[in-house]
Image (tube, rainbow, N blue to C red; front, side, top):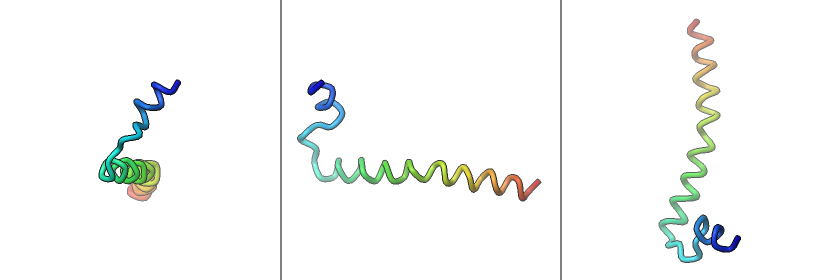
Amino acid sequence: MDYVEEQIYPASLANDQIFYRILDGIVDSYVPVLDNYSEQIDVIED
């Protein structure tokens, strides 16, 4: 199991890689919100 964790979360991540992963997670969390807005706009347009 340690090998798998090391592949997913290597201990030697640089600061920019950590920042990228955090930012990527935040941006990915906006997708459902934007999908909801898109659906609401489609309903209003129809």
